[in-house]
Length: 115
Ligand code: AMP
Ligand code: ZN
Image 1: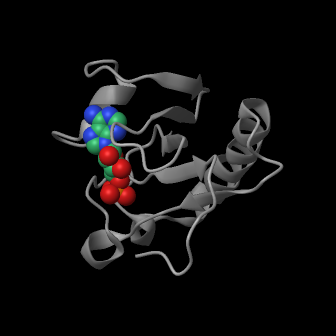
Image 2: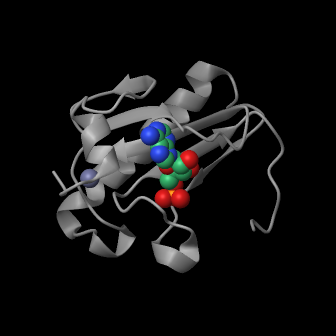
Image 3: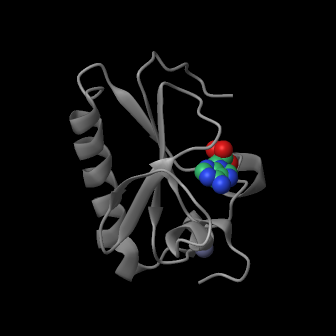
């Protein structure tokens, strides 16, 4: 657990969140400030600060993130139209919580380029 890490506290059940999916590697919950009709955060249970901190042993974990993203989009009914999976890395990338996570956004047309 990262010291004073918000997402580690959510994973530990110390801070409430609306959990949509959980397995031994990941937890998925509603973003508190949704930017689309569907906006979930896919969060590895392992504390990893940023994308730059991934190591080879995390490869399967990150593949699993994308498998779960697709399955959730199908289950929630927004897969057919399309959706977006986003990882923000460090300040210029827009990262505000330094525990690696993947935004799953769906239910509306997305803009390109992103802001
Ligand atoms: P990022 O800016 O990519 O680091 O994403 C962090 C996300 O966490 C933002 O979209 C926030 O709205 C979201 N967030 C912050 N605090 C909470 C919380 N307590 N529960 C759920 N989502 C949160
Ligand atoms: Zn953490």
